[in-house]
Amino acid sequence: MNPIIAETLDYTRGMWRRRFVGLTAAWLVGVAGLVVVMVIPDKYEASARVYVDTQSVLKPLMSGLAVQPNVDLQIAMISRTLITRPNMEKLVRMADLDLEAKTPEQRDALIDKIMKSIQLGGSPADNLYVINYRDPSTDKAKRVVDSLLSIFVESGLGDKRRDTQKAQQFIDQQIQEYERRLQEAERRLKDFKLKNLSSFGGGDNAISAMTALEAQASTARIELRAAIQSRDALKRELAGEDPVFLPEPTDGPGQKDDPFMASVPELDARIDTLKKNLDELLRTYTDQHPDVIGTRRVLADLEKDRDKQVEEKKAAYAAKAAARKADPKRATSSLDRNPVYQQLKLSLAEAEANTAALKGKVEEIESKLSQVRNTARLKPELEEELVQLNRDYAVQKSNYDNLLSRRESAMMTSQLEQSSSVADFRIIDPPRVSNKPVAPNRILLLGAAFGVALVAGVFASLVYSQLFPVFHSVRGLRRATQRPVLGTVSLQDVSATRKRKRLSNYAFFGGIAGLVAAFGSALAVLLLIMRTA
Image 1 (cartoon, helix red, strand yellow):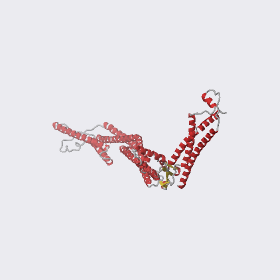
Image 2: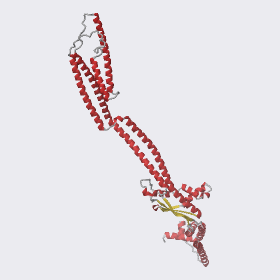
Image 3: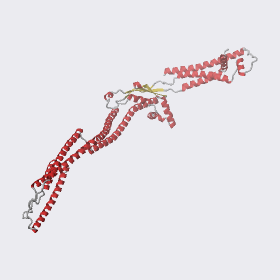
Image 4: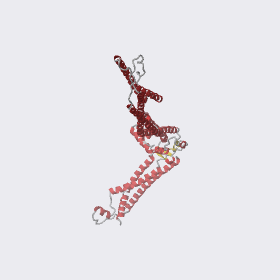
């Protein structure tokens, strides 16, 4: 015989020999199962359905004007994070369940129980959510579902409003910061323009100004060279002319008032020329112009020289008059000057004055030209700095304008959310409790208890047979003792033995039938209760 089959038969004989132990275990487990199934309290289920409408009419109308977050994603996230400890603590307070918890440990256990019992289902794709909760008390189950539904709606609206308020506060802070930066940029730009006001102008204007000044400088240099040549010619003519002395004036009664005594012709000519030039300059420029100031300074110096020479001339004539009185034989008159010589000296004085004026004019034009050239040379650097300042200002201004528009959008978003038009929570089915208990499934539990009782009986008989083994074959004895078996003695099956076996079998099968009858009766009672409920 196959060893496996033989060993299986040995185990079966041992279990059959200890069958009443298994039957007792089956009855004990079965009775305990029946008691547990019948004692478990009924649980009633409270449920509610809510639909979140995110397709508002205002959504397409406010597109581009207000910030419209992904409401579907927000609602889905809220549904996933709804069953959390903070929300459950709030639910316990709202449903007055904390009255049952006397200690913190009981409160924590209650919260854990509720978190395990609440079920949030539905289809997020359709924005339809179902809230279920089971409890032996119908009133408690309804209060829990009602409170959780309120938390769901409030969290859906409150979170968005809190996010909008935080966004508005952040935007306001950024607007204040950028307003400060913008004011600083405006102040830097204003100071730079005021500092370099004279350096800015069109590029064509600067080139035209340099061209005009260069033309004026060239013309003035030509005029100066011509004046210098004219002056040098007069000097050469004057150097080649010999003076002819005229009779000296006598010391008469009108000598002191003689115009010749009170004037210096060469200086008077230069003074007259400078006065004419000064009049011409005053018609064009103000008193603060460099040419006017220079001409007046030269004119003042010439007038001082003339006065000095007049005084010297008067003193010389006075000395001559005294000498004539002391020496009567001396000629009473002499030749003083040549008229041509005097005319040349007058022309030379005018030429000197004209040369000085032209020199001042050339110097002024060259100074202006140098200033314009320096300004034109610095202008690219100044323009580069101005471009940088304008770029910084433009960036600050653009960010500031964007923040202002974002703030208006945030305010409009807040008003839109307060109108409750972005997401509308519609309660399809209000919290409702089933009339019949939905748990436990006593019929299923009863069948499970019966099966567990049978398994417990088989297991008990198997364990007991192994704890107190009996050898049913020579092979089993030889294998257990590892000794040779010399022979066997058979039991004579008499009528008394057969009768005892029959009674034992009747008792065993009667016990099994009684166990089946007990579970059958319990099933009949459950079916009757369910039908009449």
